[in-house]
Image (cartoon, rainbow, N blue to C red; front, side, top):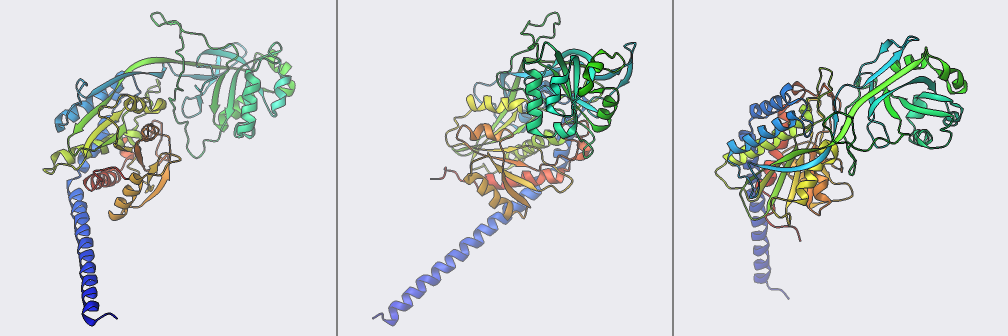
Amino acid sequence: METFAVRRRDWTRRRRALIDAAFALLVVAALIGAIRAECADEVDLGSIAGIICELSLPKYAGRLTGTDGNWAAVKYVADYFERLGLASPDGLDGYLQPYVQPTRLMHSPPRLEILDASGSVARQFKFTTQFSPSTAPGCRISGEVTAPGVILEHVDDIDRVRGEAVLLVPMHLAANPTEIEAVMRRVTSSSGRDQARLLGVVLEVDTSGRGYFPIGSFVAPGSFPTDRGDAGRQSMAEPASNEPMVFTCDRPTFAELAARSAAATTATAAASSTSRTIRMSTDYSVEPVRTANVVGVLPGGARHIIVGAHLDHVGSNMDGTYNAGAMDNASGVAAMIEIARALSASPVRPPLTVVFVAFNGEEQFMYGSRHYVSEPCLPLGDAIMVNIDTVGSPRGVLLQIENAAGRDTQLVRDLCSAAAQLGMGFRKSASSGTDHSSFANAGVEAANLIQPDFAGGYHGPGDTADGVDPGRVAEVVRLVLAYIRTARTAPPD
């Protein structure tokens, strides 16, 4: 039977344990509060806004990988790293990690026109707002096609087409993945080619909620260079003879094209008509370009974290407009640089060594981050990686803290905990569409921070600096600073 003294000793021990636990919680809360206050005080909104404005200027021309504007952006970030006193990793010259990747280059604007009976232009449509070419594999990306338009109401009507034609595919087919796959398979197949040559395809899409066509610059791995026939350019393989030129257009443009065209059921008449001719032209090439990531190091503890953001965007439209890429992703670069500035200005050494990387080639297929993973400046080992891509939403779009698809990491759980402690709105998600996935695929714990606001001119001329909220960017800066300062210095078991 327990004595009173024993019970009293047990109660005393339990009380002390409770007091110790309460004290520990108070210490943690005080630490988080101090970090929260420190982060709030040290983040410079003016610096964030200045970087976004700078990288959105016309002199950078949309920062397409491999172009002069992109190289100017590379130099800007490298110079900033130097001013902050970051170290250039061993083996790199002035923070630059050079590599070569394929890039799709535009040499003149694409054209979509209706010609009259004399061959003169009766109607010219506007690139980006009324139509856009596809440069996906299997599509012809350079040259010109001229042929009568033929309206396709059913996939099987392709067999009725005779002679050369531009196939007009209405939205009830174009919006159905199964139907459009069948259309493109029939267009590029060898069957019936003696009777019809389908030189082009125009797909009707609904842009009423957006008002423009986002510009893409994706280049699939293994894409071969294409030849424009210019003097001084290397001679490459010609596109396959059955590759059509493929455009998408908005509904009013499609209606105009259809009004000058015949149905596939009367395509023989359309093929002989000279008053209903459509002209499509593109001037793209896929070429290997020299480019570079920008890498700076802030020494800290033995374990290291990579904080990354891609600096490239989709470039110029060659018509007097360019795609500034303020939110995508000058905002992420500004956040990364502000994190570097705050940490380097602090008298307290961070518990982790921090490697800052401005990646190139994300828009093509994450070529810069994939190159870094293959040739890391520090061994990846037990490294962790936080990527920042598209932040600063002025429309209150919630922050997403993303794992790579199909993975769940302690890093993302820790970032979610830190965001909750900071009182931030967020949701946990998953995506493999940006640079964190390159690291995840190599076995590195990786997360992406994004406010996925695509209503502000995403991949178009409307993504300008005045559409980014520096205060929302600062929220992400504070989150990463808080995480780094309380981060695990050893990997999880």
